[in-house]
Amino acid sequence: MKKLVLIIFSLAFALQVMASDESKEEAVQHLKIADVTSMKDAKKIFIEKTSEIKSKKKLDQVELQQIHIITYSLEKSVAYFVENLKGERQELAKKIAIVVEDIHISSENSRQEMTESHLNKYFDLAEKFISGF
Image (cartoon, rainbow, N blue to C red; front, side, top):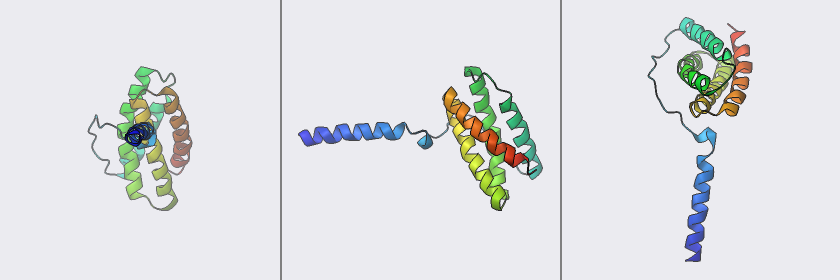
């Protein structure tokens, strides 16, 4: 009986630890955005949405939700790059895709500090990526 109780407590603790790991979280699909179908559109969206996110300075509840919405279009743009670029540019796009997903999840859950941290990573990567346009 003691072993059973110990196993149940251990399992409950392990599940809590696993559930709290942000990298395991999945974003909730709130909006349906059309896929990006051209490099021209992907570049335009990427630049515009990056600029929109950069304009957010307070990162309060309202801005976090605005960033959350912006990430839907940004994700489509980055997905186009991942699928259609090659070599180093594609690898950079893959890194950006991961960070954009992190921004999506943290902003969706109103995690100000985490969002800010992910945004800093994103802006560094985006600057490198945009310089190649």
